[in-house]
Length: 223
Image 1 (cartoon, helix red, strand yellow):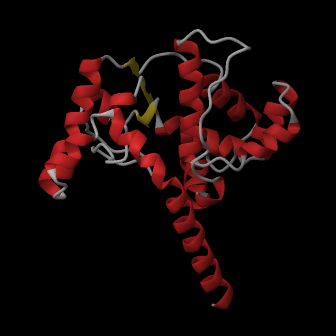
Image 2: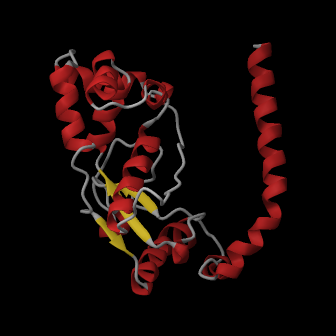
């Protein structure tokens, strides 16, 4: 499953518009996206991620989820850690479960790719512009009903081979013509053998990530 912003539907509509789900690229297909192994493309509105971010980080929003909807308070508290992309991924997982008619014995695994502490200024802007600085229980009920209580299977596709090929080909201009990626390397990414071959580098990448984090944290501690 691949997720994108509804306001800039690159995989669905070949790319146009702007959005506020920060961290998701605009109008290009990432070189590290295994397009030919993507079964679903799901678009999520930045209105949903903005509004739910406010809900998950407000007393009225958390109280509504716990008291009116019966969610475990520990789960409600954890939602404050979700950033815009994480919220988008969760909504896309719900849409996927509905499209595939999954039940309580099935599972969809997604990734919380960013944290809510990255967006205090965006949260303040949404609170001020959409809710007049006051997010109350009525606001919480409206946000829940709009973005969680009525999730549909609109704005998503089950990819055929032709869909995958179309999406894959969108990357040619960015990576070959603009960035100078060798055409042969670009084309190799159509094959699942290429992607399976990358697994041998996982240990190396983990070590590089650990070294980078240690270097950054060490620099912060000494500054």
